[in-house]
Length: 187
Ligand SMILES: [Zn+2]
Image (cartoon, rainbow, N blue to C red):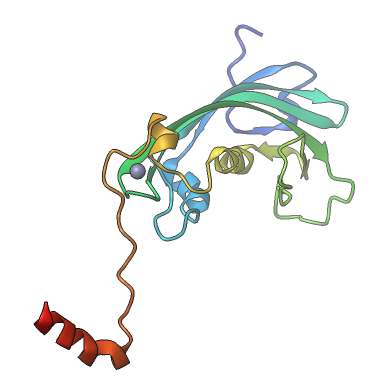
């Protein structure tokens, strides 16, 4: 196995050929942004690096097991003080890719990622055909690692250093405007 070239994130199941293969690759920032950019309201997360993937894949009957380590740097603005921050993700995943019983269900997709449950316990990823593309799974893994309301604390372990941005001033009811004018004159 030492002399065997590592597989990329997209590979043919035949490449595994009953042996464990090293898998190595990257998911580009633009591809990550398609998913993480939609989180935390208008601000959004932004990938500041590709997601680097290093792991191994092997077959278990008709299924394929992928185990690996994912690293990525994801930027965001603190939801409390709007300071620009970044999270350095470094975590491990294990995925079981299961051969789909009815191969015509999604003829255009090699791998179909099922909508995830809330928990992260061993989800099953059905695949069709002879190819596996891990990129959509890696992208979802990255998403699951990100907090929903990231603040400075998530990046630095400490509270915000900048003063908190005050909430917008409440609109003055127009009926009270003349009264407020009088109040200003008196003060
Ligand atoms: Zn902050």
